[in-house]
View 1 (tube, helix red, strand yellow):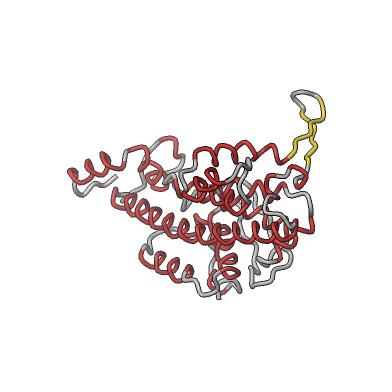
View 2 (view 1 turned 90 degrees about the horizontal axis):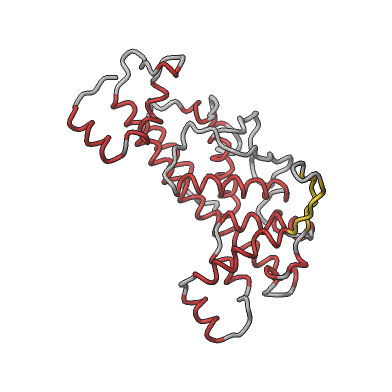
Length: 288
């Protein structure tokens, strides 16, 4: 690997860490990669360029996911509170379904109430919360739990996705999904997917060419423009499409596409096909 300035390179390795940067060395290796032989003309500058691109990409994704999370949080809590005519629906076990499955390890059928999967975390979040509205509730009321619109403000996007998944009444789940222009199984899948993506961004993980966990459910019918072509389910491009679609629903005047295109233009050497991008992707209905 070519190194133009050894002192600067040592400083980068010291401040960023060899292990973190080594993920960006990998695309520069000859095959088989296990031999750790770099391609001709590979340079540390190329790896650093990929690292800088990835960092800016995470910032853009995290910023947009925050908008989506806040909007979905509000839609779920407002729609469900109206549906049940109760501010305490989220802490009522009867509102959540029981899932049955066969445990091969135990050789028997198991039943799990979805409520049990998140109520413990709700207890922890309320207990450790330093938010003024939680403090005020504890001082003024004797109820064990505050209203649902307070509770959801203490929860993570992952918690929220589990709550939506566990709702018993399909008619309520459909009503929530319809407000976002999706089918309920698609919204459920997308929330889990974006929650995972958000966690990668929060922990500064490699994003641009990462093979992502969880296959995403693709919509059959959509309220807003979607994709005409097949998309690789395991790479980032599909998640970027999901972000863009949800923003069309909750924030039609957003600048996500502009920021994304500007970033790609800033780093023209980045292999966008490693993220799952297709040729002429900007001609897709979703991106026009």
